[in-house]
Image (cartoon, rainbow, N blue to C red; front, side):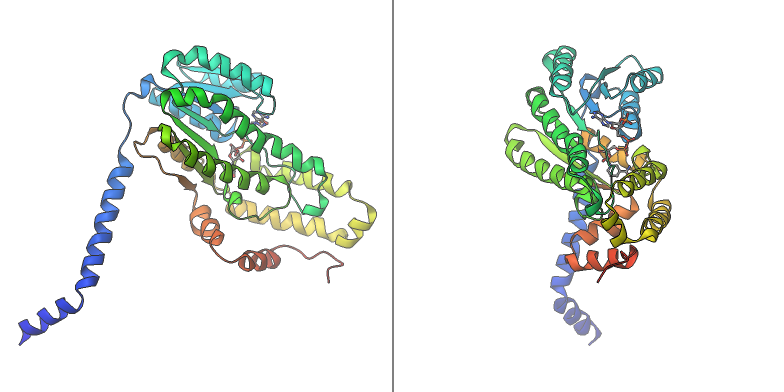
Length: 332
Ligand SMILES: NC(=O)c1ccc[n+]([C@@H]2O[C@H](COP(=O)([O-])OP(=O)(O)OC[C@H]3O[C@@H](n4cnc5c(N)ncnc54)[C@H](OP(=O)(O)O)[C@@H]3O)[C@@H](O)[C@H]2O)c1
């Protein structure tokens, strides 16, 4: 009787067991596949942009330690000198401004000579700017453009100029977007630029996959770097406020800026993660894994807050931000 009952129970739940087994097997295979690495990294060349500070700087040091030939595009001479001082002979630096096609072309010619017949294994489009950020109405058209020039035009120009070298090595393009390229939580050019990086990367990935080139998108949450420096953010907010007309200032009210900065201060202190290796580990995986992922989300806030929010209806983000941010004085 007991045997019959057990048999009946088993048979009744057979689809549950089959599905469970399939899911577990799928996870095991995925984890195994994800852990496979490429070989001969010492033969490979990687170009990184924006290496003076932050993620780019740490990534160069880590790739150098791993044995890659690192070609580090630095924005300033000081940044390049500082990086060279702490890295080995296989890391070389070049001055690069991603907003200048002349500078990009020069860096590409230099890279072509460095890599020779090997081609370029990887390019990491990391250089970026975030400021000014703030209420959209406070921006001038140039404020949007100044960000787009670096974060969008720079990424596209670098990618298109270096593409022949990447194609030769059947290499990787790693574009640094942001969780703010999934959820538009700030006014100004930054979110727009990161949405554009997501879109450019998706189109590019589909178009050039036929040639064995992989395109990966890094979506960091909030991390403590020069980009999220609170003093710089506050300085820019004050500048934006001071250039507003008296009518616009009156519609927000004197206390608005003060309250906005206070909330931003608290939110950034709470959310910014000082451990930037979470981001560089994703970049490294994109360059060294046999099967790199299409998207990497780095940081607890990205995984638990921003990425889930990006799948929710817009009204959820609208209400959340309305509850968090101050109301302008003359709001209706
Ligand atoms: N930190 C975060 O929370 C966060 C989150 C999501 C995404 N990101 C993205 O991650 C990337 C790296 O940012 P980060 O946080 O490491 O900040 P960062 O330390 O400010 O790094 C950005 C680097 O880009 C350089 N740069 C700026 N304009 C350039 C130009 N025209 N040409 C070449 N290089 C230029 C900067 O040089 P200077 O310092 O000399 O200006 C700096 O070295 C950016 O694309 C950013 O949008 C950051």
